[in-house]
Image (tube, rainbow, N blue to C red; front, side, top):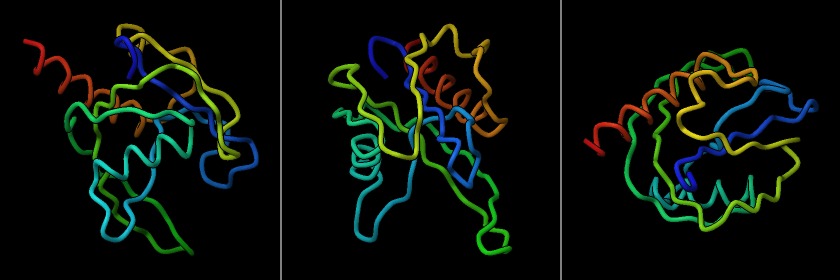
Length: 131
């Protein structure tokens, strides 16, 4: 998040998992790493952005498959304040966009249902914290 805008990344067409779809920067927590440290590391790795965690913004469950085995995953969402909007993409993404929060519900890019749900959970957290 930067000036009440959200960073979305478009996955590369070469990615096996959800190619070309737009989503939030995300990743896995490494052994011994706190969720807050993991979110900042993933943001740096995927978009070259440094930031600070402002607060926890909810959870979303989703299912995926690894080697034909169904896996239940829990995504922890955080609101992160980016130090600036300069994006340097890694190879997993091919484009990015900073969308104002008020434009997210009608985002023109192709977002999957999981990403829309994740954004809604985070927006609900953002709105309740600002009331």
